[in-house]
Image (cartoon, each protein chain N blue to C red):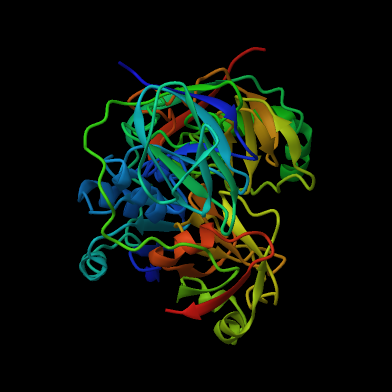
Length: 203
Length: 285
């Protein structure tokens, strides 16, 4: 675990992988760490707007996020994402993985994932898990328009576009699940730490 | 009785801004908020508003609004000609506008963004606790357009003078303090020396997301990709081109390029007032 100061009032905690970052994030929420924002990401957790950096650094030295062997303690019920697997890049992903398109679907629906972090746009969740071990490259030319609900793969992550936007992820399917509604108390359906399972539904 | 604004001329870009929406970055929500927060705060204080009241933020070209109600108004930030029904009013001072009168803020004489505060504040519907327009994600009220109506809130305080000097005029060449890191080790060894000895020019494609700079490219030692990580306001990110950009309030919550340093909070307002073509030098804080 590396602690990197960011500007005058923020701290970036760098760990070895996404699961360890999720454990740091969980621990930060459990301890109710004083910060304006706590932002998990692929291998880091950012504590932004911290009133006492030295105290947080001292406290973090006692955490042992790298020690755990179990998957991160994803909380609460599993959110099922009903998905029609008819995306335009399904064949491309199958070629990358050297499997059939059917096997892509089976692999993608076979295991529970968790939301490692959000980014790119409000409610855009980067889902990952032990099953997604084969990285998928981004499109060389991003699409100028990806519809809301598109399910895509990039690197070791699955993402669902909460709203229409440009995008470079390889699209394997689509869902009609509402992923973002700022009028709800919990605006993001897939917040960091949420357990997720993609479920195939007929087109 | 509720007072209203009717937009007659929105200028090149005018948005509603308050202190922004913090605490939602983990959901991918940018913080948004007035870019020159100090100037926005002055304007609010001049008309007796709390510091978190929503104001209008112009961009270079000014704005004209008709006021349906009697309100106190103050204009701060980038200095500009201010008129009510064509009659001049002072900049950075409180004045009264009567029902049906039009307030016009002209093009910025220096700097980039002027702030208009109205007693009671702009009462657009809050989204996640803020009335700020977020140009990156689209959250909050839309950008102003001609014909748009915006309600004003009930005034809660009385107008008073400012007890701090207001910056009048914005230089087109500035020195900006930067706290090095967190990713210094991703850059060539002399990166800090290069950064502090180079003069950068503000690019025309700067916006509320960031101030894009052109000048000496900052070369990297690490050629691998940086996994996405959380970003802070003021982060100086260096994309593949090596040309740094200073993130402002509508910055994305995460990014995949290394951050060489972070501009101090005190100097961010100055960055927000830089016009395209202005010159910027970094000074290690």
